[in-house]
Figure 1 (cartoon, rainbow, N blue to C red):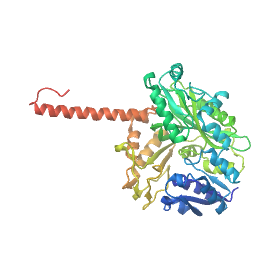
Figure 2 (tube, rainbow, N blue to C red):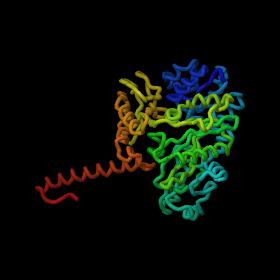
Figure 3 (spheres, one colour):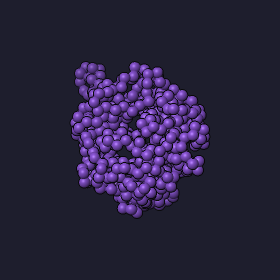
Figure 4 (cartoon, helix red, strand yellow):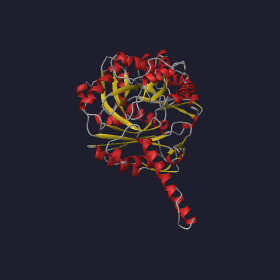
Length: 475
C-alpha cells in the first residue's frame, strides 16, 4: 500500500479522497492554486503545495507542477479525482515516466476510450450495442448530407475528443446540417484541440443509464449496478439515483455484462463508468466510457456498501478486488442532488461569493459531500459545484421524502444556488412516478415559458379591456 498520495484536484472530491486515505493510513498532499489557499482540502491534508495562479491552465492543469509537487513531498501516487487531468492520457504517461503511480487506467486505455470514434469501433467489435452512426470522423462536408440521410434525422454531431456536451449539435433536418457541422467542428477544435466530429442517430425519448465498473490488475472486472442520470440540463447531470425504476434484474445483468465486456476490451484497470442510452423498448446503446471516478459515485457506494475510492486506491496499489460479481448486493434506494452556485432565475449563471449562514442537513440516511464552511470565499475560476446531497432509504418513496426534507434543511446565505430548482423537480409528477427521460428538464422549462406567456397574454387582455371599456380582447 502507498505511504503518501498527492491529490491533483480541489474542492469536494479532494476532501473525499483525503478522507479515504486517512482511513487507509495513507498520508496526503494537497495542491492548490493561489485562489484556493483557503479551501478545505488544503487544511485537511498532511501537506499542501501551491502550484500556481488562480487560472486552472496555470495551476491544476500544469502537469510538470503536479509532478514536481509529488517529487518534493515524496508522494508515490497521484489521485486525479474527476475533471482537470483525470482523463488525460498525457498525464498518465507523464506519471509513469516519473515512476509515480497514476490512480486510474493506463494511458493506452484512456486513449482508446477518450476518442469517441475509436471507442465506438471497439464496442462494435466486441458486441456492445452502439447507436447508428459513422465509424470514422466526418472531415469533408461534401458527402455529409448523403451520410446523414442514411443515418436518419434527428441526429447528433459529436466531437470525437469531446465530453460534457461541449461541441454537440442536434440536427433535425438537412437544411441545418452544414451550418451545425461547421459550428461543432469549430467549437471542438477550440475546446479539445481537434475538430474531428462524427454523426450519431438521436435515440428519442431515451433514458441515460450508466454502469459503474471496477477492474484490478489481475484480470478481474465487476460491475456495481446502474445509476439513472436522465435529469440533465444542457447535457449536465442534476440528479442521479440508483436503482433506476426502468431497470429490472434481467436488464441490469445484460447492461452490466456489456459494461464488463467494454472494460475487458481495452484492458481496463480501476474505476470506470460505461454510459448507455436506454430506449422505450429496453434496448440499450453505448455512448461513452468515463475513465475516472464519477461525481455521482456516492449513489453506488450507498446501495452496494462498497467504498469506491478506497477500492480504487487498493487496485492501483496492485491488490485484487477482493469482491466477486456474485458478492455484490444492492440494498435500498439512493438519490443524489448536485447543488451548484448558480442562479436558476438567470439562466443558471454562476454565483460565486462569501459563504455565510451555512447549515447542512443531517439525520438518518443523509450524506453531504462538500468543501464549504462559513467564511469560505467561493472563487469564480472553477466549476460551480458546491455540494452533493445524497440520501438513502429502504424505498424510492422514502428516499424522495428524505431528499425533500434534506433540501429544505440546506441553508446558505449570500450565494444563490440550484436548491429551489431541485425542489421543483422533486415535486414534478413525472419525476415522482419515475416516468422521465433526458428531455425532462427541457420539457419542464418549456412548460414554464408557456405558462409565463399565458399569464402575460391574460394581463395584456385585461389591460386592453380596461382601455376599451370592457369590450374586445387582446388576442
